[in-house]
Length: 165
Image (cartoon, rainbow, N blue to C red; front, top):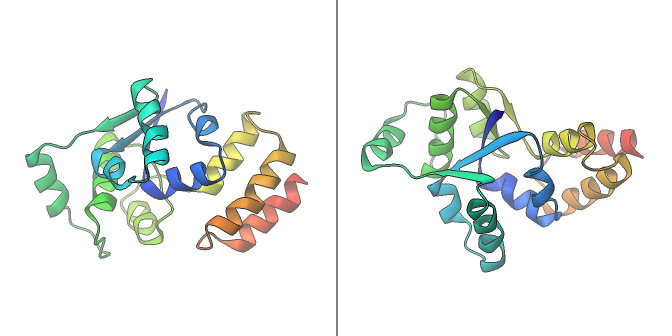
């Protein structure tokens, strides 16, 4: 099974359009760090994430103090201010796997460091390609995503909506 490391934004996007269970239905081992899990503070969202941890569908890497020091000292060209972002970059580099993020700086940094990087739109496309959701459902979800996350590329979303309708 292929590994992916994901950041907080992607979890929030998937929860906001109610496809988190579908995301975990993909043929990937989904991983994150304890820093990401600790950022999810709304009780309803935290409970959803905890359910996937308990069912072993989400692997959470708890970083030791030595690993945290490595994360803090990780050299990046961009100013990744949040340790959460650096932790998922560090883990994806360590595992040599795809990083799924909604953060533009993190995406650019990870790509420059040789990682395959995708975001929430990739998740939706992959859900369609694997027939977990239909193209018509994907178009509806993308319309919702446009509303809940205005930092996503509108043009790309609109192209996908047009393709799926």
